[in-house]
Image (cartoon, rainbow, N blue to C red; front, side, top):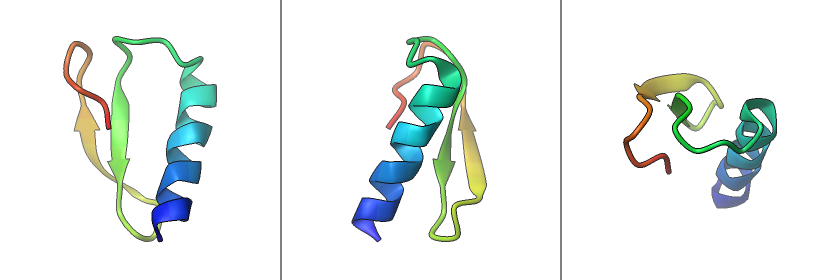
Length: 44
Protein backbone atom coordinates (compact mmCIF):
# COMPACT_ATOMS: atom_id res chain seq x y z
CA UNK A 1 0.00 0.00 0.00
CA UNK A 2 2.96 2.30 0.60
CA UNK A 3 3.96 2.15 -3.07
CA UNK A 4 0.40 2.83 -4.22
CA UNK A 5 0.25 5.91 -2.04
CA UNK A 6 3.57 7.17 -3.38
CA UNK A 7 2.34 6.64 -6.93
CA UNK A 8 -0.83 8.59 -6.26
CA UNK A 9 1.22 11.44 -4.80
CA UNK A 10 3.48 11.47 -7.85
CA UNK A 11 0.46 11.43 -10.15
CA UNK A 12 -1.04 14.30 -8.20
CA UNK A 13 2.18 16.30 -8.46
CA UNK A 14 2.17 15.88 -12.23
CA UNK A 15 -1.48 16.98 -12.38
CA UNK A 16 -0.76 20.04 -10.25
CA UNK A 17 2.46 20.79 -12.09
CA UNK A 18 4.39 20.17 -8.87
CA UNK A 19 3.86 23.77 -7.81
CA UNK A 20 3.98 24.57 -4.11
CA UNK A 21 0.99 26.40 -2.68
CA UNK A 22 -1.57 24.46 -4.69
CA UNK A 23 -4.44 22.58 -3.16
CA UNK A 24 -3.61 18.94 -2.66
CA UNK A 25 -5.31 15.88 -1.34
CA UNK A 26 -4.76 13.02 1.10
CA UNK A 27 -5.96 9.72 -0.32
CA UNK A 28 -7.40 6.67 1.39
CA UNK A 29 -6.43 3.11 0.50
CA UNK A 30 -8.91 3.13 -2.39
CA UNK A 31 -7.23 6.15 -3.95
CA UNK A 32 -10.18 8.40 -3.13
CA UNK A 33 -9.69 11.95 -1.92
CA UNK A 34 -10.58 12.09 1.78
CA UNK A 35 -8.95 15.33 2.88
CA UNK A 36 -8.26 18.54 0.96
CA UNK A 37 -5.28 20.55 2.15
CA UNK A 38 -5.24 24.25 1.36
CA UNK A 39 -2.36 26.25 -0.10
CA UNK A 40 0.35 27.28 2.34
CA UNK A 41 -0.06 24.15 4.45
CA UNK A 42 2.14 21.07 4.37
CA UNK A 43 1.18 18.73 1.55
CA UNK A 44 2.18 15.12 2.28
